[in-house]
Image (cartoon, rainbow, N blue to C red; front, side, top):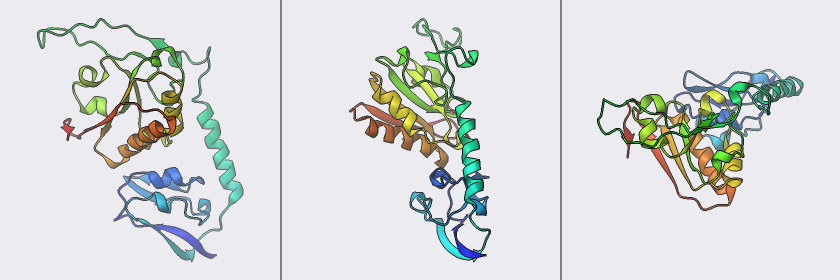
Length: 238
């Protein structure tokens, strides 16, 4: 049938993933760093993804395409919801998600290369998807919200950023979720003293920064915060 459907210009697409997040039907995926309309029968033609595209890569077109299949979309949404619920861990559930708080000896490495590096991770779990919105380790915490890759790109992550903070990490591209609601709950419902966001320079990492900034606004609190961007070769960018 001939109908209105979205068109994605891959030359303009920067792979930020905002369109995929905005598409409630799940028609769009990020493939090889580009947004692609993977399921034409999931696209309802309303264009919720259009205003979220920062590069103007998405437009409407009329062409031959499968009809929008609402029943299949709802079934896929239910499956996605159930998959998400599997990540919600309750007390007595997966031991790997059980809350723990660590006390590390706060000593300086006076001789570089002679002392064993010390972990500065202050709690467990640390994944945004697994950490609870309320926990004792958030009380009075300086919160570090870091992209997964930063710890591998930046060599001194523990000492320069994690030390003295509660660290939570995530990847908006791989997790394919919007962290805004979770981060809002953490900031709003706990006595957070400051927020540091450490992200990579790649466009998809902007999703983590936007979620954190939205959470700060939504929390209704005025908290000191900063964003630090790490280059792919492991340097701090101005």
